[in-house]
Length: 235
Ligand SMILES: C[S@@+](CC[C@H](N)C(=O)[O-])C[C@H]1O[C@@H](n2cnc3c(N)ncnc32)[C@H](O)[C@@H]1O
Image (cartoon, rainbow, N blue to C red):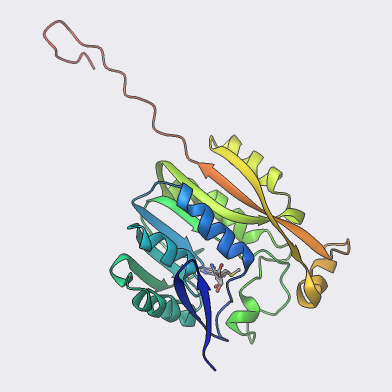
């Protein structure tokens, strides 16, 4: 059966083999309008909503997902929404990919629940939210690699579940020189499946806040030039 979602005039075809965009995805997509950028890397693109929203306003998008079905769906959704010229989607594990390039924006609704399935034998959808034993591995990777993937003054933008302490993540990014803001987005109900995973963190969690972390890489320091009276630089 064909399943569809409509987000602000974007039509998103869904699939049982690909993570379904949730309220956090739509919040992040809308938030991304605030970031001026010419190109963007979408890490873990899923069905492609973030990529579509960016491409619709003329941003050149590189989209990645470890799930090949997600990549096919993202590309198909780009065609359906007439933005395929602006979206290049690739099936790859972002954490091992090399030569991804540098971007004005790196955006992700990352996997961030405590892992629940063995890596082999589970479906892509079962693995879509696995953020390692404690849930924070993928967010850690994003933060550690942000400076490599962003141009100076570029922005890392991602959702961050409240129980994983977004302020602690923000502090680590600030220590690396990023200018960071954390904004509350919405509250999600844990549901049965997520609730079982969250119970592994030690405290029963029935609902949790979702936050947006926006971290801007510092711009390069202005080049200082000392000019002689003839106009030639002394440096
Ligand atoms: C929480 S889902 C979000 C999907 C989509 N961005 C959305 O919001 O609807 C996380 C996505 O990241 C992908 N993913 C997980 N680990 C990945 C990795 N190492 N490299 C690339 N993509 C990954 C999953 O397959 C999944 O599509």
